[in-house]
Length: 366
Image (cartoon, rainbow, N blue to C red; front, side, top):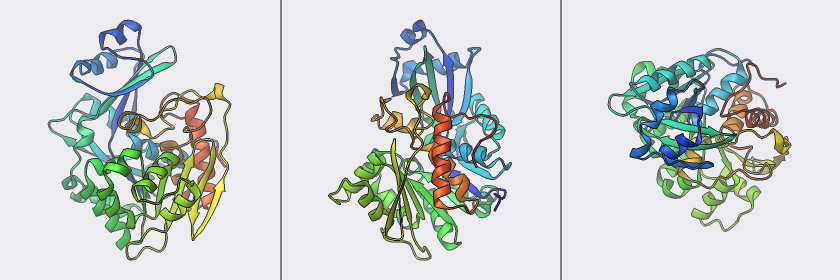
């Protein structure tokens, strides 16, 4: 079954990645350390315009959910199969975001905040190493009033699959509740990502409200363990945790839940109908690993929960945005869980070999 227009909707916190090669003087000027991920302070604010003025600057419409939606769109190759909502500012970086999403084939309806600048993430590259400095700004300003406007709610109506990353709970939990309830009432598939350990710990109440509506829950092993810990499950066994997540109470109208947990280089764990299956991942030789940001859970994870360091093996790499994007691309076409997992691993592998969350013109997946 081919993907139809608007079949998949994502809602999240958009960040424009502004990537450029810089020199040591630039790092010193803004007091930046390589291989680091921080939130911007006052002293960093002029840096974004300076990066943008560099001849080698590249822009990518990022943020965890938007990355997944772009990857799904790339895998699908059907113009307008995906749509996205989030908040940007009324500025030149907002215009870049719109241009980038459009070029990716995603139908993006951004809420444009009058006062906050577009959320940005500076990616300063020196000799293959990089430093990330995020200014979340407008990404934190989404309002449910935007969602309720007829032209935006039309995207919700049209979608058969709705995906959110847990980062949305930090911004507009009421918006997420609205689409979750809509999905349940209209026999649609609602998918959510645990996204980061701090979401599972500190935004548990918002997460708890939406969990019963989730047909699919994605996460990685670290998030799954924290999710279990805060619920007092007293196990660190990923297969047990996945099973328990799949068996959490469901909202009325929901038939079942599938939990999908990635474990870096270890097999992907899928719990469904009281059973657990594992699927091996495609492993890459270390010399092919170019970038771990796009394939990891967006810049938010690097910044808000700095637990991620580039490991010696592939552990912690085949998770997050790219995997989910690949998975969704098959799911929305009615393909099997096996095919969806395979597509997720394929997409993560492609993106790990490239800088940022970027991809070649066409996928080579069958």
